[in-house]
Length: 570
Image (cartoon, rainbow, N blue to C red):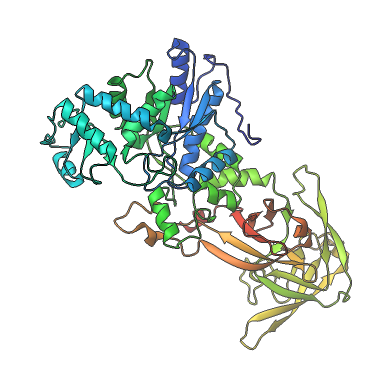
C-alpha cells in the first residue's frame, strides 16, 4: 500500500447504516449491502483509456471509485480500457499508474480490457448466434445517415436481416483479416426507432489493422467501448460500475448486452454521477492534446495544465486535491465548479505547512549609506507567523546593500501608498526602519538605485521613541542572496468557460499565464530539497521544481497566490 493512501473519517463496517451516507452513491451501496444483493461485496473499478494523461476531472472519479471501495471494505481494480490501438501507448499506462499512487490510492488488481479480447469476441459470437447482432457493410457516414435524428426514427440497414450463419461466417472472416478497415462492422440488433439514439443498432466491433501495444498483431477486429466495458465489469465481478454523466445514455446498452449474454447474476450495474467541470479550465483529452502538439504548453506536465502530472509539477499537494473533491461532493447534475474552490483548498493546506521566507522577484538595489561596508548583522526570523504555534526560525543577513521589490518604491506615491518614496520611512521585515534619501536613475530615467539610511535603534522593527511607520516591505541582502528562476503560473485560460463559445477554444488562452523572473531569495533556501514548499512572503506559495531545477540552479514554481486576484478583476 502506498504511504500516501487516503484515509477517511467516514469509514464504517459493511452494512452499517447507523449514520446517514453523505451522497446518493454511498446510499446505493449501503442499500445493496443491507439487502445482500452482491453477497455483502463491494467491488469497483477505475477504467481509464490509456490515450492521454489523467486530469483534475479524473481525480474526482478516482476519489469516488477508490474511496467508496475503501470505506466499505471492498476492492477497486485499475482497469485500462485499451480497445483502440490507434491512440493508446505504454507511456500513458505508466503515467496513469503514477498519478493514482501520487493521489494516495492503490488498486486491488491491475487489469486490461485487451486481456479479455478472446472472451469479448466469444460474447459477440454469442449475440450473433442469438440473432442479436449482425455484420453490416454500410460505411460510417451511411450508418450515421440511417440512424435518424432525435425526432425521426432510423432506418434498417439493408444488411440487417442476414442469417445467423452468414453473420457468423462474415465475423470470422473479419477476425481473419479478409476485409479492409471500414468495409464491415458488427452491430447489435436492437431497435432503429428507439428513443435513445445509442440503442439504434450500436456498433460493437470494427476492423482496425493496427498493432496493439499489448497484443501486437494478434487482432485486427477490436471491440467498441459499449461492448467491452460492461463485459469487462462482469468478467471482473464488479458490483458497482460508477461513471460520469456523459455515459448515462450508454447505460441502456450496458444492461442490454449483459442481459443477452451468459453473464452470471447478480450482474454489475452502472450508476452515473456529475463530472467535475472547473471554470477557466479545459479537461477534454483531445483538446489538451491540441495544446501539447500545438506548442501552447511545454508538455503534459506543464504546470499550467489541469493534468495531475502538471499539478504535481506545479506543487499542488495530493491531499488538497482529495479535500477539494470531498468538499464539492457527488451530485446527479453537471455544473461548473469555480476553480477558486480548488485554489482555496491548496492555499488552506499550504498556509499551515509552508515555512515563510523572503524573496524579491523584481529587484531594485538599496544602499544603506550609514551602515558600515563589509559588516553583516544576522537577524532572527521565524519560519512561521507569530500567531501560529510552530517551531523553527532562521538567521537572515542584513548588510549595506539590499534588494527590494521595484513595486515597493514610487517616486511620486499617491495618498494611500504606504511603502517607500523619497523622504519616506518604512520597516524592513524582521529588520530596521529605513528612510529613502536619494534616488539614482540611469540615462533613460529609470530608477536603478535607492540610497537610504537606517535607524540602528529599530532592530526587530520597533522604534524606542514610539514613532510609527505604515509600511513593511520584504528584502534580501545583496551579498548573500541566491539568484534563482521564479515562475509565476496563472490560469491557462482567461475566459471562465472557454468551450462555451462558437470559436476556437485556444483563442481564450491567457497570454499572462506564465511570467519568469530572475529573482533573489534569502540564503536559507540554498539547502532546500527539490519538491519542498515555502511561502514567499507577499508573493504566494512556491514549490522547488524537481524537474526544472538542477544543481546550482533552482527553479521555483508558484503553486498559488496568497489570495484570489481574479475575483478583484471581475
